[in-house]
Length: 227
Image (cartoon, rainbow, N blue to C red; front, side):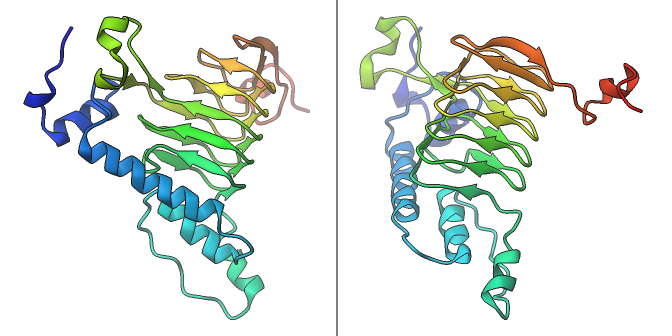
C-alpha cells in the first residue's frame, strides 16, 4: 500500500492522523506543531517556583488551550481556589502535540509522563497517574517496506481513561485502549486491551486480577452489596 504525500494537503494529512489512518508525521506543518508542543513543555518543566495561576497558564499553553484565565482574586489563597479543578501535572511532562490530550477535573499526573498524542487521549475526572507512565496513541505499520523509517507513514488509535482510575507508575497504555471507570492498572503493566469498569489489571500484557467492590458500581447495589 502506498500513500502519495505529493497528492495530500496538510489538512487532509492531519485529518488522517486524527482518524487513526495512515498519515505522514514529518510534514512541515505537523513538525511545527510538535515543535510548538516541545517548547511549551520546556517552559512548563522549567517554570520553577511560580504561582498556581502561572502553572495553569503554562500548562494550558502545552495543551494549546485558549480558555482565558479568571480574573485575579484578592489573595493568593483565594486565587489558588479558582484552579482547584484544573489538573495537577508534576513535571517533567512530554507531549507530541498537546492539543490532542484532554483532562477531566481533578486529574493528577506524576513526573516523567509521556503522551504520544497522535490521536485523542483523554483522562476522566479524578484519575490519578503515577510516575513514568506512557500513553502511546501512536503506532507504525508492521511491514518494514511500508514503515520505511522516517519517510514512511504512521498511524494511531485513540486512548480513553475513565473517571476515578488509578494508573500505577511505569505503566504503558497502548493505542486504542479504553480503561473503564474506577479501574486500577498495576505498576509496570503494559495495557494492550480494554479494561472493564471497576477492575484491577496487572502484568505484561496486563490481565484482569480482580473486580473492585465499590458502592460506585451500579452492579454492586443490584447484587445486594448495599445495606
